[in-house]
Image 1 (tube, helix red, strand yellow):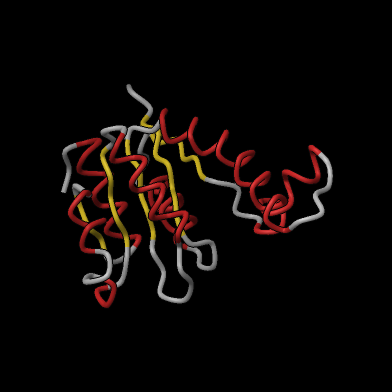
Image 2: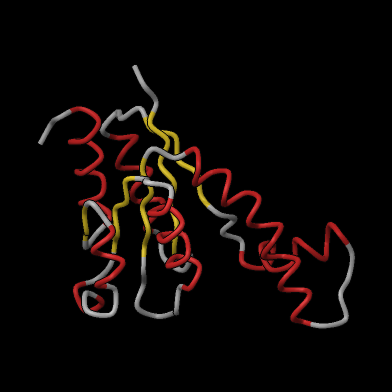
Length: 150
């Protein structure tokens, strides 16, 4: 039986990832989940912690973004499905970038957001194969795609 690789991209301030992971485990789905580093400080500081300090915040952020991109590019490239979550509190530029990158790679994309974000995310939604409003719908989508079960 195939183990599906699902990359979870997007906001880090709610438990949506855990809800999808637990739902998939409870359904017995053969899924391996990957994600960006969700520890905000570790993600921001990885470049300077590993490669040395920078005097300018621009170069500090630039270095960290490039180190994080090694992980993100690799895991997105290996994914069968990419789930991109947009929350309403923070601007998720990284999530939008991941959605565009996944689209360029021809990945199957599921977008997850509240109905209030439909208009601002219309281009991202248009690139997706499904648009869900809550993590339970994502689990249902995975169950159907993997097993053909409603």
